[in-house]
Structures are given as structure tokens and as C-alpha cells.
Length: 309
Image (cartoon, rainbow, N blue to C red; front, top):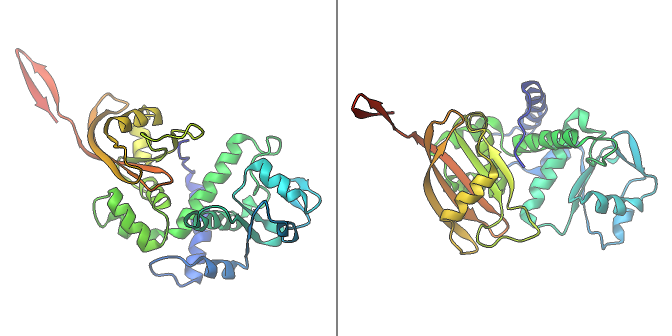
């Protein structure tokens, strides 16, 4: 799945509500403390497990998808969670965030922030459970989720200080790991933000280990591109990236998997050199590519050929 780019007006509207949260918290630098965010917004956080009968006691009397009521009794929440394969959700009328306690701890911070973003974006109140194929089109559902992802990213990586850290040195997976520790977030969410917010030609993928793929998982789950890359290299797909990974990635289960300098042609047929590197964190393989230079081309002039940059 490719990352979606929001229109400028939507970005401005989300930025405003997120900036107000940072200002209210007197944020300056470092990791955002989600407990303080929840206290500020008067949000409640609960964890659930589908095999825990206490879940029903923690839930609301009604729940909606769009304008459609899908839960008339609290007990139906379990069925809804299973139907939509939910790991987290926000319940607007109870101002409650529910998170599946069985997901890894490192991922809970992102899930919680994603649901906080749903609570912050005013027009999301009726669409917190996603697409039930009747109240929301797939395109609308993807847009709503993209907006929550953007809002969550802006909340965890405040724009001003994050930009300073991102531009302070050449971007690499090692630098992404350093930034992730500074802001207290996962490497995956940090990589996504570093690439999507970049003005440079860069992309990242999140997915399977190329030498150890699982049959029930997509080879590349997310193909994250900067706007400039998405425009100039609209011809490049995640299928091609997967083929490149098979050329240079090693077999070890975790850690750095390999690096390659690769010539990639843009939509105009011009060739560019990218440095591409991959790293496995045990859950996913993270790949990042960064433009280094345009390849010189050979042009015939009479009976000679000259190199042009």
C-alpha cells in the first residue's frame, strides 16, 4: 500500500489542532508523554483481550460506524472487534481508547496516538471503526486512516524540533534509529515520518524479510514515498523494490541486511543513483533509499561521445 498525501487544507486543519496540544503541554523537545495528552484531552485508556470476559464491563452501550448504529448491546462489541480485525479503537461518546493488550508493547504507543488523532480531528467522530462496506467507501476509509496517521505522526514528532533533528545530518537507517530513541517512538513510525516529511528524493518500505517471507503476509506492506519521489518516480512500484531487495539482502533474521548503490530511471528516462539499505527488527524489514546523484549519460557528437551530467 502506498502512503497517501493529504491536501494542503486538511494538513493545515490537522496541524492547528495538534499544535494547540503541544502548546498546552508547553512542549519543547524529546518524547511526548501520552498520559499528559490524555489528561489534557480528558481521554480514558483501557486495554482489552478478546478472551477476557471483563471486556464487556468496560464498554459502552452503543457504538457507531458512520451514522449507523452497529452495537445495540455492549456484548456485541466483541463481534465488532473481530469483524473489523481491530487492534485499537476510539469510542467518541465515552472518550475512551481501547487497545488490544496482546499487541507488542512497542506498538501500543503508536496505536494509542493514532486513536488520539481520531479524537482530535473533528470530522472523525462518526468514522472511528472504519469501513463496513456500507457506510464508508474503501477510498473514504483509507483517507480517514491517512488523516489519523498524519495527525498521530505530527503529535509524536512535533514539527519544528523534528525537522531540526531530521535535517541535522545525512539520513540513514542508523540516523532513523537515533531519532526514534530521542522521541521515544518505534523505528518504523520514525522511518515513515522521516521519509514522508522529506523534500528530497527518498522512499522507504515496511514489510517481510526477503529471505524469510511468511506466506500469509504481503511482501511489502507499506511503500512510503516523499512527495518529490512520488512525482518524479511514479513509475517505481513496491514490486520492483522487492526485486532489488532480493539482490542484496542477507539471510540473518535481525540487524542490517545489506546495502546497494542502484541506478533507477525516473518518469523521463533519466538515470539516478540511490543508496538503498535494509534492516530487520524482528517484526518487519525496513528499507530506506536516498538519492545521491544523477548518472552521467553518453551523448553522440559526430564520431565522438561526450558525457553529460
